[in-house]
Amino acid sequence: MMNDFSVDMNEYLPLRDVVFNTLRKAILKGELKPGERLMEIALAERLGVSRTPVREAMRKLELEGLVVMIPRRGAQVANITEKDLNDVLEVRIALENLSIENACMRMTEEQLEELWNAAKNFEATMAEGNLVKLAEADVAFHEVIYKSSDNRRLNQVLNNLREQIYRYRVEYLKDEETRNLLVKEHKEIYEAIKNRDVKSAQEISYQHIENQREAIIRSIREETQNRQIRK
Image (cartoon, rainbow, N blue to C red; front, side, top):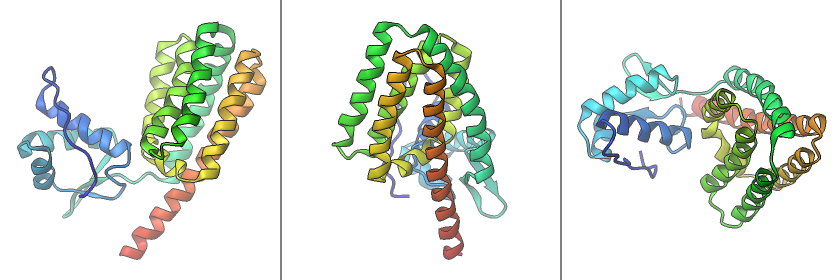
């Protein structure tokens, strides 16, 4: 396990929760890859903790569907299937439509400015070449829309759905053409919301997510082929 992640200690949380949050973040950001084996001893040594909090964190990750237990092999990062992805994005599209409809009605001038700044920040971050940071800039753009919809429960569900495919977002952003397309789509979504054009904003958002779905499915199929070759 040569991926670059380390434990982020928090004096207010039990050690098992700190380890859980660290491993969860590493999986969601793709630092621990789908199908990668998770060895208790190696993880404990790497994080500087005993095996007990690692074991407890594994159980919680299994409940979230991020880790699976394989007989005689132990724990490994769960693979996401095309069915998983389509299920998540089907729900996300429906909820994004509601969020955008609310945003078109409720977004203030200050929030519109925040949305524009988030779009420009994404474009500026492209030059840095840091894909994890770029993924976070993309998330920040959408979070402005979610927050402006003024529906806390809706925001929570959308954030949870987005996190479930976060680990594929970096793969999606590796392609320069994809990054340039996202810049264009962000600006189009901003203009549609600014003009309070619900239909246009929803159509652009749908295509935005559909492009992501197609790219992630390609990534899933490549991973599946690579696993079969390794076997």
